[in-house]
Image 1: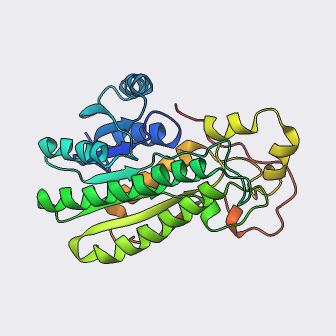
Image 2 (image 1 turned 60 degrees about the horizontal axis):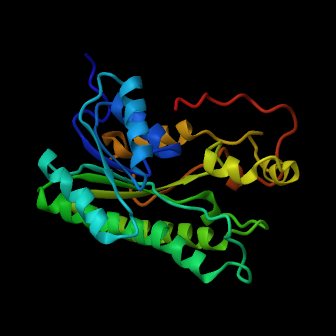
Length: 276
């Protein structure tokens, strides 16, 4: 039987119960990784675990853990739990929020700002910190940490979500610095920067508001929203040894959105189907 691209690697995925996290978990399982699925919702985790087992019956070790990434004790316990597996090899800091009350500098409530930074920035910092400690503790000579940022960290928009945008800019900055600080230890840090995706998080927010939806879709060179599975494929690459010389990147997976001035005319191509 062919070896998977992540064969035998111990991986932690936060925000694993849905969207990019769940799609990545499925692909990681298909590629031979042992996976700890982390999320704040235990019922959603149970459902996600059942889905992964259904789709990948030959998966390696799969376990779940409830984790509030804004609390360091939760993140520390999550990462240290893999010491009994031999130590973490891959950490995908994917958990995050985009709050409906997030707006511009005038209208964003302070409590929404603080909540967003606590989850989207502190949560990533805590994950990176304890991943480094775990890799050292388990005497690993290499490791890969992937942090979910966003295309909004490199591209401005007149539809503000300021707390979210600022948080993702912070993720880019801290990821780049950690990549350089820990390069000689063999620990790679890269940011994943998704474009707008066909996920419940965004689609529920857009709802049936067609003008709001069109205002975004008109800018897509591809003519469509991305799919979570397309992000998951990028994460597999960053987690695997195939990307051993990729470090400190802002990996934009946005269909060319951040590079576009005028978009093409004509019908949009059909995107891949979402596995989950």
